[in-house]
Image (cartoon, rainbow, N blue to C red):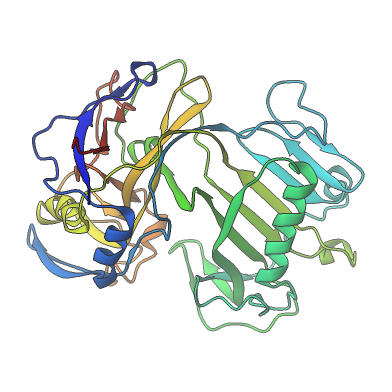
Length: 406
């Protein structure tokens, strides 16, 4: 590769601060090279503070050829429906859909929400059972299979629903949304409020279950994985106390399909929510990345320290950092592992029942579960417990490719 790696600051206007050079990765790689390295996955057993932690997961890397650094902003208002007068959200019926025309969240549901609410269509039947959620993920999703009990909607139906509503309300704005998972109500069971879990055998029912599809947002062929702020907030760090604190976009779209049988109506009440970013410009067309093993080594530190108890997934993509501008973001490369993280190695992880293992419990309901970030250039863990009010959301410095001088 006819390149050398140079560490330099991005333009000062963007307030991108250079990280300390100590501990930075010694070798750098292109995105295709990282993809080859990731093919072996992460399969290792560790001893951490008297506990055995086994990681047995694939490593997900995008199929793109380059990894640009981008600027982005919140999506603009749709000009196909009136803007909210209050500057926040105001639900309006446009003759076909009830729409919340917001920049952070744009929601659209079929029918007149206020009329359906008056008829009691959103009241769940008060009986002893409900549908237990089951998740399905690519590549195992069958697009034309109806996963939810008594619900004819399919993943392909949800894809077409999301696409049609986007084209209706944002026809001039391109977007890349890809199906990430399908959530379906499959078994109708009793929910134990004391244990916070479903119990007993599935029961017969003629009710229609829900079908929900979650779509990840991609830019330049790379997924937007998380807002960096979300990692700090989930694990109790970064208490900024700032007056300009702003909500965090979810970086995905969700579609929900359900019937109106509660109101004895034959129609459906499908709903779609968009919480996305809009690409503005490429700051750097391609940046070098640390090796996969360097990123794994960063996660091994809190594992061996007894803090990182479970690693569910490891993905390479964009982390969104606040700035520049009032509603702007900078998208930089990051490894994101979702798992259970505790600051105190002596403390036991939350479980629903004492006789369960952590893997058997519904650990995703715990506040100890969240995204753990590693800078995909330096290979440094981005401390989720940072409390420096002035530095809590600083963006990482960038390392660039630069052609060798001949």
